[in-house]
Amino acid sequence: MQNEPIPTGIKADRIGRNLVIHWKDEHISKYPFWLLRYACPCAECRGGHDKMSSQPPQDIFDLEPEDNARTQIKTVEPVGTYALGFEWEDGHSAGIYNWRYLRLLCPCSECRGK
Image (cartoon, rainbow, N blue to C red):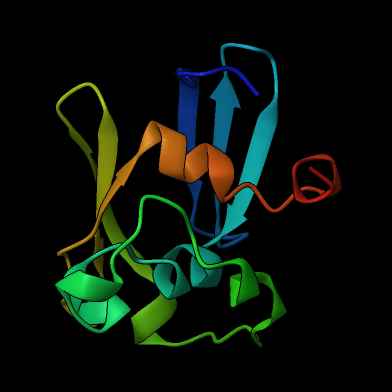
């Protein structure tokens, strides 16, 4: 993985319920919506400012998927040139997912093996 991951394409697939990011190093990450929500980096979802981290929790990949308003993306918006912000169908919109965080969250077997 490169030091500063840079996306070259981003698509929210609402039918497949995945966010697909093409990276400059030609890697493709496919994030289930539920995984993005479970990994929300905001203070509310992490349980307070003292539990926030620049890395996703590693046990996130062991959780059971949900399919409900909490895990359905309503909108995806860029945050400057460094991140994405999501509004979820349940109204939550506090998390800012920077490129490094998203790349560390990639669920593919190649990335999980690192």
